[in-house]
Length: 410
Image (cartoon, rainbow, N blue to C red):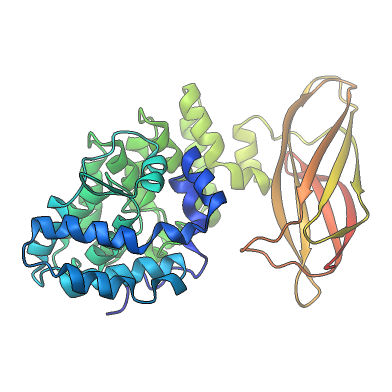
């Protein structure tokens, strides 16, 4: 059967680990390939939990199907292979299959730090938890779409032991009315993981997730959910709301600017932090309405000089930016200063990528020097090409300085 998440991008899921990672998971990720979290041992322990709650469960066949050639697969492919093995061996009746999965679950997580638990002990002695539930969620997304109420109840349980943010998206696409009624109810759920799922699972452009094209075109169905959650007691939930609003800003900048204008006055420190994080893309792009909401609408009064070292850099190295700001104003200036690297593309043209720089208050007549090291190490989402790379600096949305460096591949 075609994967319900078949439209997931090919970028390795490991890149999304920040959604779950605590310090112990990050340490493990550095020590060994992230894909090894899906191992034959993980599958065998999962089989024992499932068999304990379904005497007819064919553990041997499940393990064979799930582990054949597993070592040769990348992480997402491993998770999908295990999901296919669940399809072949769990009961054909979805109600029965869902009941077996739920009965086999470990106790729900209460901590926000899902990754520490998921990464260091992916299947608990008490039952299923952690990364194996990515496969279980995929199974529910494949087999539960025709019984959506039952499928959503199972995802409610799964997300409290890992995350169902990818698995819930096919339900929202196929059954939007039921899906959003359910999410509205879940905004009041006692579990912070369920409340986070409301926001994270409905993000229009969730990284590495199925794009919800209807919400990209019209995000209004999610706005009541975000209003209900933006002052949630959990920072884990609030950060998801900020990321969701930042998603919307990519397609509907004025809508998010209006949101900020409405919700920023008299905001608590927690809400103000959420709104700052939600507006990061708009601030980087110099969106005037958003900058004005944060008191950053005034243009920089002064001069700026940018120096780059070295003038010739290699892929894998770094460039140091040194920026001198000299104020000519008679009053202090609140400034957000970001920089853009105009990466050379395969056809020789350039494409700018904005990076977060500095937030500061520059006194009247003050001269300040700022430095930042910019890494040129290869990453999975960017391919470097040799050539002249311009770097521009913007203050409160307006360009104030420019320089360039030459990049070589060797």
